[in-house]
Length: 129
Image (cartoon, rainbow, N blue to C red):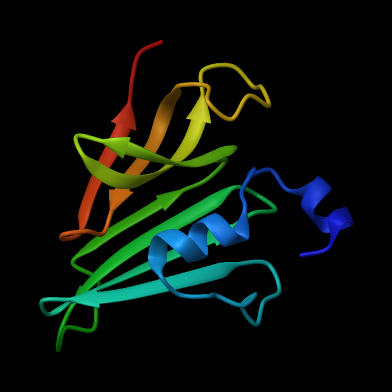
């Protein structure tokens, strides 16, 4: 993503961190506005898509041979993403802090926590600040 486009993004993120976490490279999707990361395990397929410009983070989990997702989440307005260790699991946290700021370590009061090892785990973050 170009520097100019990166400055216009609502969501602060680093592409290489997502590549390290998911273990795959996701080129910019055809819409030129999003990145999708796909992982499969034990008959489940996790699709995680981020829209950096508007802060969207879409998560879907599919079971083999079922067309519709069995779990679906559509977050909008996310400003922060980070990778943390939570309960001894490497996690992606994406959402927003209580007050707008550029501090990457600010506690998130709303969002999603996702881990993919040793299995998929999705938790919603909803803390009262």
